[in-house]
Length: 381
Image (tube, rainbow, N blue to C red):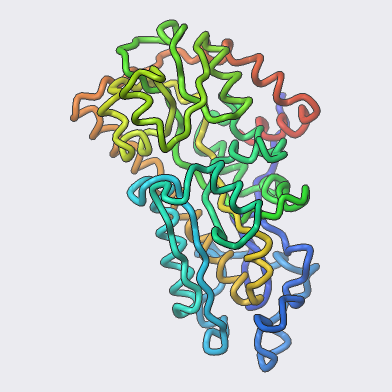
């Protein structure tokens, strides 16, 4: 019998100058060691800075941290952070970006400005990651899919995208609010990638959609299905008997329209917002993965922030994550009803067992060396 793991609260309380939130521990470089030009004002009371080893020791209420009055915004330097989002703002993850921006600017009295660049104007997730990891400071923050880190040494993040890992939204949020989430969020920082995870969110279960009418798993055989250059998605598509075809997300609409690919997969809200029903009007609700996402920031951008600014970023992230959790399912259901009313062929999956059986190999191949950690994920359901 699977052992039960105890989920921790969503995040610990923030006090001015201390850093907590959504599973991120105090950074290895103490916040008091920020560059001189962005140091917290010397006149700030010393007692407002919690010792680094005590960060996160106080329990939080469910509002997500301290109030804006706890921050010395009068002496706070102004900063603008560029935040990349590949999807439009009217998607679930687009709304999370808006919630984060609104809260960060509110808490900082406008001293922190979040410049959200949505709809993929800064490139695909891989393009954004290449820019962030390459330095230069043109992109400071981004919302990325968990599996996007796979090609950048994210062995733990890969586990979040394995098919049929999360059996429900509750299962995912049990993970996202647990101590285990911290281990996953810190992976990119600890392996020297130059970015750090801040908090988790989700964009709904992902489903396949096709240009041709289908009725079940057997109809996917031989189809060319779009994938990003990712070993999990390649293995998943191959397990279903289809042909994985790498296409940039920004080129996916035209690839569906011209027959370069026969189908792809996305969460329901993203499927609609990117106008894919126009060229691929059938969606089969297989729910192969829960679209786990995380928000990352470059170490370069993070280390330029004062202690109060870092705390505001985390408090705003906590708020955005909570809003995402509260709204994602209702938003998804609303969009699904719209799709049905617009004539999209929505195919229900009565028995997921054949899909699970077809994807066993990709799970086995991608959990080698991390079997115990993967079991911990499963046990959180």
